[in-house]
Length: 441
Image 1 (cartoon, rainbow, N blue to C red):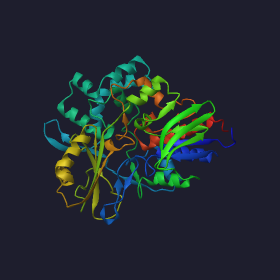
Image 2: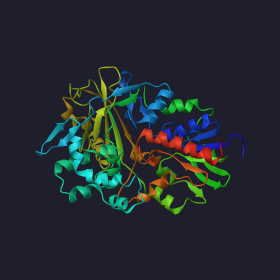
Image 3: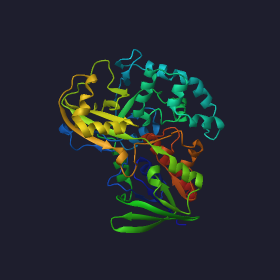
Image 4: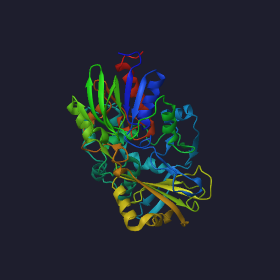
């Protein structure tokens, strides 16, 4: 083996770039490939089309103060974290009296999740082990089935449906084990502070990529992996054809949906292959609406709301930027993703804006941009979620190395699945595994 092992990293999102960054620091020779024409994956800042030099996030947006990996990476890259959404999230939807209204305050979440605490305590006794019979029982029941079984009111169901902008899955599609796992790790806890990167979240990716000794090979797709005891031979495809890349180890930092199209020889173990094949990715349609003025800003009221409407969750998409105008960011998750696309097809962005009058008297719509992650060929959804059909024993297998192949990505994270933080942590973990597999000291 060479003194400087060669590691191939497939995927130039935050996971792959974090892995490449860590390996480079350790002295490895790293080659990074990505199928897209840009780095960043689902971290994508939209700058074109908006007036006044404004921009907004088309993908991953909010950074929470307890997300240590992304916070520390931003500081390493000398990026500025700007506090946003200081009043937290509110809710717009059906209330206990059967009328739609705006609700604010953190107490609503406490009341919403109070009936689950017995199950949460039972889940905590598992200590994160998804192989137990208790985990199997939780995993087979959907949140909707649980709400029906416990006689939840229509107002409670509406609030849980509003969380599809967070989980990217409706209550009918989300497994109870996913909800309990989130609550057991204090998912809505922390100190409530939220941030963005000044100038765009995509700088997390571009600065990592620019710091690598070798440029990322874009528009390059991983097609086949032949692995042996002493390394791998990957077949990649770019615009000039198919090429073989030999490496001492491989880090697959791609969504599970893209990993399914890669041929492994010999094949992955059946349970691991099945886990990758059955993992679902939530529907996600992001609509960015730029208005002439920030009509939604009111003293003492949040700038962010969950909702059970087809328009999904909505929040101020660029409050940290100057200018009289502003951008609202809408994220329709789960089944709302298709519902929002229907509105767009029939009524356009103006029709979507009309459905936001509950936020205040509309100002003129200046520009709009739509990102439909469902149609993205390299992911096919927003991020991963666990449905009742997913075997919980497969969760650990999503991240388990096989030979000299390591796996990274938000879907492999335990604590921060679905977040930028989870992607970064998983990349660093995969880098450490690759170092050990190639006997790096």
